[in-house]
Amino acid sequence: MKEPALFSVIVPAHNEENYIGKCLKAIRTAEEQSDAGRVQIIVVANRCTDKTAEIAEQYDAEVIENQDKCIASIRNAGAKAAAGKILVTVDADTYIAPETFKEIRSLLGSGKYIGGGAVPTFDRASLGIACSTFYVLIQMLPEIIKARGMLSGAVFWCRKQDFDAVGGFDPSLISLEDLDFAKRLKEYGKKQGKKYGTLKSKIYTSARKFDQFGDWYLIKNRKITKRIFTGKDREAADQFYYDVR
Image (cartoon, rainbow, N blue to C red):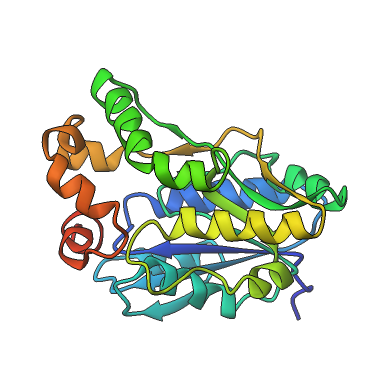
């Protein structure tokens, strides 16, 4: 019988055979370097037609099949199956640092933090990526102002009881669900006298969207970019997120 897990890591994955192995290897490395014992990995295989599930099983991950075209619902499905007291969400093309679990445990154990996110670094850089990132931040500025400051995301972490208390990710949002979750978690924590934190551990994420669409795509195609950032445009979200790969 496996020992109970303190951490449950949720990895949403849609045809991720080219990336998920590196993601899961990074999680297992962080597990080995932490003092938290076994880490439960839950890969939510979303409409996969490749070897994503097979690769996940090689890393002793639990695989859940999911057919939703909604990243909020996909992550929530993973959270529902989580047995750990601490939840961490990691995208399949994102790679956590070896000290990530140690840092999360320290921050939550301090009693000062409700949870938080991370600020990832792309695995390659270019002028187009830098300008596109700045342009996206400008598009998100109204929401950032409402949230009273920048909210980090990419890798979310909090206690499962607090994830459940805020209702998880909002399935009515097709995109921008991450910013919405961060805002609600931050507000919930504030009521308890706790802060929303940002990991110092180095987190890397792939630049695959730029590899696929082009480094200047989001600026050259501003109409679709603005549609994506409504959080409600199904056609735009499918074109950029759900019907790729």
